[in-house]
Image (cartoon, rainbow over all chains, first blue to last red; front, side, top):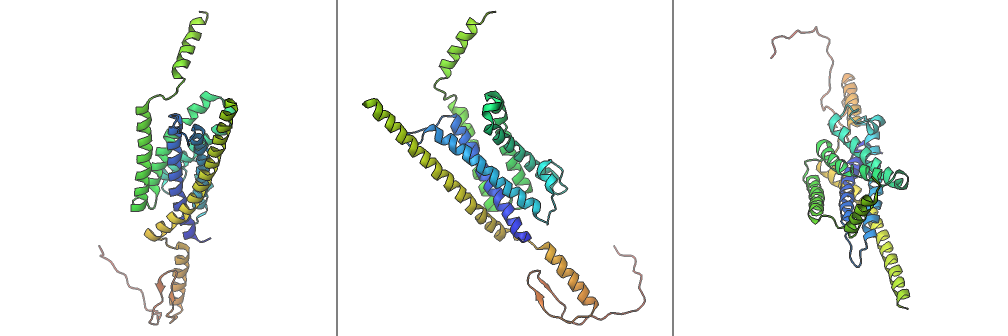
Length: 195
Length: 102
């Protein structure tokens, strides 16, 4: 495989990974909001969120592997694992490594959610809100095409979509239909607890 | 048997949703694969790569050919380098020291 083909694949896979990651974040927010309709049950949002998250990891792996084996940069495998260990664009590549590892942690803890418990899973899952902006900054900083019109447009669409979903979530409030019942139950349990 | 009908409706709705989930996942995977090719092609069009290794090789060969006074006029299409059209002669005169440059 020629060097340039690896380079183009790295850039293409990076752009696709950003789109997929943004879609995963938006679906995660919609999942929390319990969005559903007659033809779109709630588990569909959660299922698509999970499948796209796994797919994001696959394309991120393609992005990383093609970047590492590209002889132009001589990045080395350590760069893919240890943040800020690269001589080449140290800060920007380090941010990419951090974003990848955060996403990996989120996916792995989701796969073993039954073993680690709901609270630990939720805490780690909140890292998604850190992983996505770090990935965006990584793309804007190190991306060869960062200021190309096509990638700039793509990044703008992703940012608007995720920010829109976050704002929608903040404005919508808690959509849990059992929230009041749970609060009442918890309050009753607390009253019955011996001092 | 209204309860049974309701259950059957729910089962059918769930199956339909599962099929939709599979279709959406497959569609997303295919779109992502196409996207890698498409974005790669667009990035190649906007900022084409330079073959650094082949350029280095061509540069070396150009140097070696000049030292042997080659008169080849062929063009290396992959590197964009063109050989000199005039013969290169070597000289053995004494060296000249230059100073005062800015």
